[in-house]
Amino acid sequence: MPDLAQFQQAFADAILAEGQPDYRFRSHAFSVYRNTSARGAVEALRASFPTVDALLGPDMFTEVALDFRRGTPPAGPVLSEYGAGFPAYLARQPWTSELPYLADVAKLDWLWLECFLAADADALPVAQGHQARIMLHPSARFTWLTTPALTIWQAHRDGFDELDPDWREEGALFTRPGPQVQVRPLDRACHYLLLLAAGSAALDQCVSAVAEAHPQSDVPELVQQCLAAGAIIIR
Image 1 (spheres, rainbow, N blue to C red):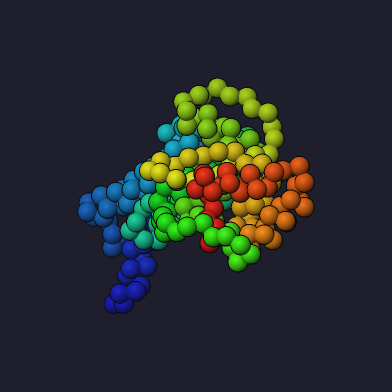
Image 2: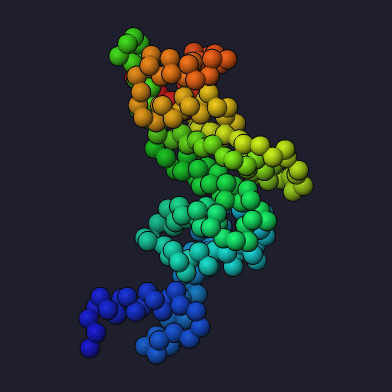
């Protein structure tokens, strides 16, 4: 008689397998459970990646989500945490060469969700002087993209289906200064500033580094804009 671990592994394999399951699991109850499990994973991905769903259409998205689930089933019961690997999965699929921005759009969907679910920071006064350090706000998310995915993402979020953007790199910043997530484009100077903030840099060193790398930028003003947007904290 197989031990519990072997049975659990066989059960998990049967849940994910195509076609007729192992004879031990050929029951109506198991069939319902397998269908429910698959549907839950697909709908969790659809909720987390609404822009990808809009771009692909519901039928194709379902097929793609099922294929992703076969290789990467949910690791736990909290389905809002499921899908972190979906953008990378899309980037590996040969068919996405016809939609070269799709993986980046998926990344933006996921960053929006992370920002929405992230913790708030304690309300503390802004530090002054040489001891001040610049840090990324816990809810802030940012990225640099090699495609115009932010333009495409925003257009589909706003309900525009037809779009022909200029092909260029774009940066994106997600913040949550209030109850709603806000998204804004980034330039290279702001992206560099946020990279330094993510490493908890000394404020004066951070300002000097950004000014040296991007001499045309008004770095103090950039810091103030990031503070106002809820992207950084200075302590």
